Length: 427
Image (cartoon, rainbow, N blue to C red; front, side, top):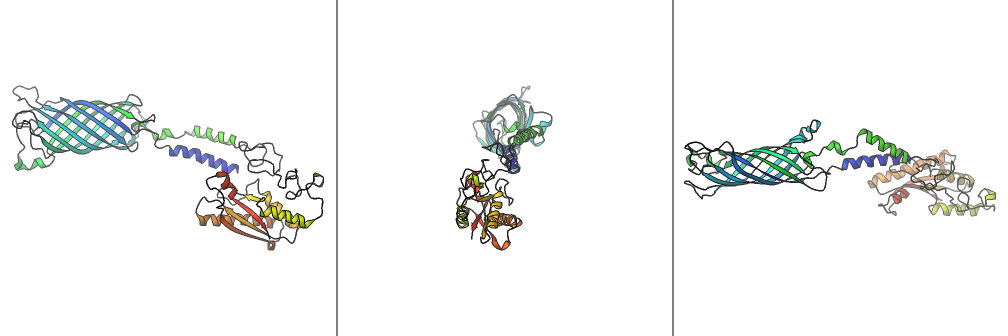
């Protein structure tokens, strides 16, 4: 039983660590601002600056796990002319809205081996947008486009709730009719404006705000941090071993033992309490007739030499389920504290040669029904072998597996323990 409990508790401790796979936040809000660079198409003689300030981004991001996620973001701003001699002035407003996939490069490449402060996210996706020139030939025209976007975002972790970000993205517009300066249209004879022929860049600085009740966001969550170290696990196992110490050697660990000082060899129940099966005040390990009441002066056996009465009392005790051999989960080996019940049956049969007994095996409802049927038969056979080995003729014994005991509440661990048993029926 101690081995069973130790194994169960160890597996439970490991399962807690293995199942804690979502103890990080997944949502975040991102805001940033910076500049843009219009590449093409531009009307000959019109130039855009290397970095035109006035671009902004706002978005929301969700991470499925530490490595992958998506974000929905909205970008807006304006294009204007470069400050060069004889460069015509222009102003064109724009906006875009995109749904993008996100890859956490730091977690994918295990950057935590050398830094937990810096990180990089890659993002790419598509969306829609609008180009609106404010002057020149196409003033007021609303040029609706679709776009493809890809970029890289650097992160510096400021706290568990905030990260500083820097992003560079390239955007390709499709179905764009007008140049970025608004002074001319794209030549439709080339048919290039139907594809993503327009290209521009953005560069921004911003902040990411992490949402959620956990202490860490997926951007910075390290899977290995959520498992116990070898030293921690060794300490936990040591604590479990101490908890399962059995001071009186009755097979019931101290933390479950309600009578932790029972004498050596005493027959106890699952809570470590000394059994007195016949209620005559003499514990079973001192009672020579543990299932028939008798005075202490006769070692617990009845004074009357009435074998029929003793047999009837024993038959009632057996058939009413007071004598059982119990088993651990998925085991056909009797638990130490209950194996002596088989010896009591053997002793009675030796004293009563005309008695035959059927050995009946049962299982709880955990697991497949056909498997539990076979397990109940194995349990009955193991007790059958014990009684025969004690000297009882096999012709007086039979055994049978009865499968699952559905009479107990399978939601109760104590009830399931009572179901994992072998009982006897006097023939």
